[in-house]
Image (cartoon, rainbow, N blue to C red; front, side, top):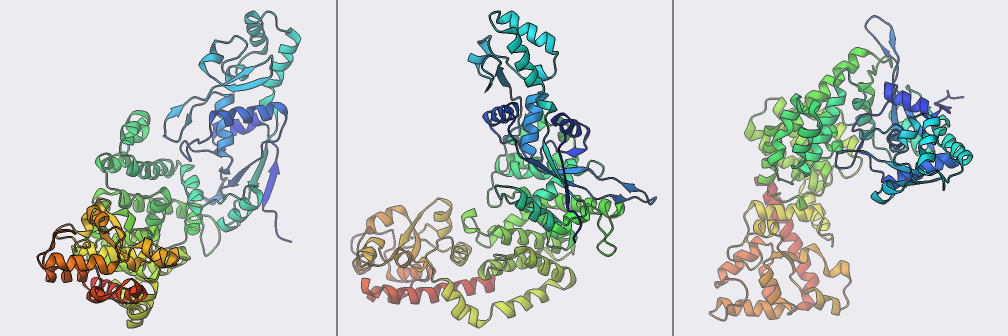
Length: 596
């Protein structure tokens, strides 16, 4: 029979709150912002008052770590489910401030009407009504005799006995029990995740990054609490630069740290090509610095796990925190971050809509940091990062089981010359069969977010190609300025011929085009508007863009991978056109990959 994996206890709510205050249960200040509305806090207090269950709190005990002198240090409990409920309890019962989703400290005041035994969120109207107690935390922290006396003084007609009984029931809330499931510290993260999902009635998925963040935030000895804030604040600032002043004003402890100086450059940054979440920062920093791809390993290492002896050692935990700090500092470094984005942009990925794979972006940054650490020439780093990024997008390398693939790649990259490893992968995955058959087949899709279509558009940006029928406006201009995506063979006419959405919305039927040209083409059959373009190049009326030479039209078609034979095509030739254009798109992508 397997050993017990958890214990179930029923501590008093006041005991649980005392554990939180003493640090026995670690609930870091910004482990996760408090997202509950004040009405949910009200409902929680009402449930407790009525004697209803409020669910279990789940904690995971840190394993006991062997110290240098051979003694054991008993691990804290790390909260993995129930933070919102515990935060709500501390806010309502002891009046503690909470950090809201905007990272601002606020007070949630719950009012109570003892005559109706009703809870409400405090409003100006309630504050003026003598029948209500403005803030129940004053009741929990006060004297019953005084509380009843003060209330009866304001409400002399109230039944004294009832008011005494009601306030006594209210004060007894902290004396009620709450379920606490404590998971064994020797369980690995996969088992903890499985237990969590089985226990949690909503089947909420806990990410391994969440475990890591809870773990590092609870460790003040090795600076995990500040590291946690640095990660959280960086990801927030990347999206909202104006948040900088809030940190400076409201988190004076953090604003005095080296981390704050290292992320301060984001206050003037509006680039949104790569807005990493805390999960992305963790993954990149960990894989780069530990040469591992599975975040569950990081949880074990931060616990001090010795993978050979299976024991937990203080020195391993200390070194793991040091390495993670180094990895995060490399990630948030302004020079590194901006240089990396410049490389990605120089490959033609000028807009975040062209980058749908966060995993590919994350590993490209890992590669950049690793090659820099290995002292590769900057020109080689640029070349290798661009090629690897495009290769992974084209092949979908990180679309399935990304952790295993990250683990495989980083181990090879840390052990081999990267140029040799890149050639191995190219020979295996980018053969002639890929360019001449597989890629063409992948271009047979109606998904405008397809990675291969985005690579095609990036190639157009890289080559500075002009938009369809444009004389001067580039595809890059059109993407950045939200230009139109045009159906070369008009969509409405294809629909009238009975084609399905998946057939008329083929990406091989798409081009970027200026809005005014798109409007003028409208629903004209392909043969009609192309005839008018020919006339325009023979001195006829200028209808579509500014191109007036046939050779320029041919060049424009070549830049957009459109077969010149399209001039002889009619609406009935749509399928033939798609086949020909996919081949040209594939050839363009191949030329682009070779040259970047």
